[in-house]
Image (cartoon, rainbow, N blue to C red; front, side, top):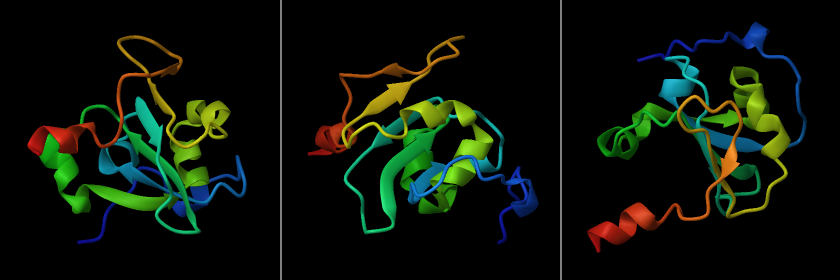
Length: 121
């Protein structure tokens, strides 16, 4: 089934260049929620920036289904939520979130992408 994205191709402006690809959830690109959680892991390939963007409303079950996410140019996600732009040069291992009514991202120091996997081991 074809996904119906919140922004059409002709609405995507060149805000940033040469950041590569990323993964973002459908809660951002289809449902229109802002990015409220972002982290950067080791890239999967030469085109991947390592950035992962979530709205913070995704359940574990939601995240386990690859159909609920997509691969995008980082510029595309910057068009959905320009507040990510100042953080895009952060190194691999960086994690940021917005909590409550907070308008700015803050660094997270107590979370790592593999934390959820450790609970199942």
